[in-house]
Image 1 (tube, protein in one colour):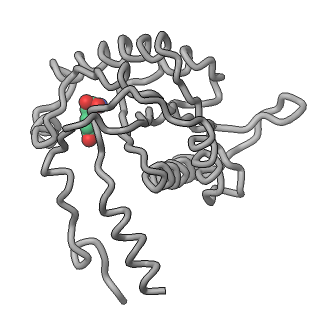
Image 2: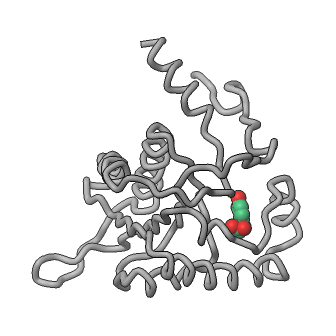
Image 3: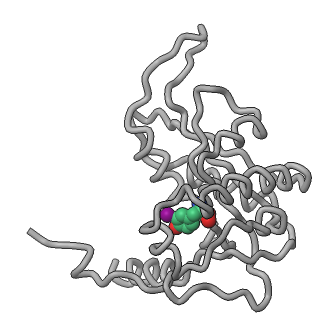
Length: 205
Ligand code: IYR
């Protein structure tokens, strides 16, 4: 047990959020297996309130880039408070998002705010943000294990993703996951590799 737990930790420790992607395509079956892994996540009343829209079409990726960069420009040039920009400074991010064109795949993750039954009636979903967050974690972990890099990108607001992906009003876009292989020579910020020690993130009672 200890060996397995250690191995899993060591494997996850190697994951880094990547912002520079190679355009090399990713086999569809790998992504399908990772989506199946995400779909095993626990969820409120097992309602599985998520949808994953996988985008590989260069024209659609480009449209997403145009709309995301427009939102990001307003964020970096005024909407974000000073404190937020200071927190982001060690990551070196800005409003330019070339990875939205360059990465072979984008996965738009939607949270189903409520369900719709066979009669077209709405029914409640429970613990939706928690459930979708857990499934997204499973997905990132599965993609990493398969040898793929990811970026959890959150253009805000991201309502444009619903229109581009043809998703219904009952679903809210929550994360745009960028997926692919790192560009050769790709760098990652030192800041992102610094993880809090065990004593800082846990306590035993
Ligand atoms: N969505 C912006 C800003 C941003 C916000 C957080 I919190 C980050 O951890 C990273 C970026 C962007 O993608 O640049």
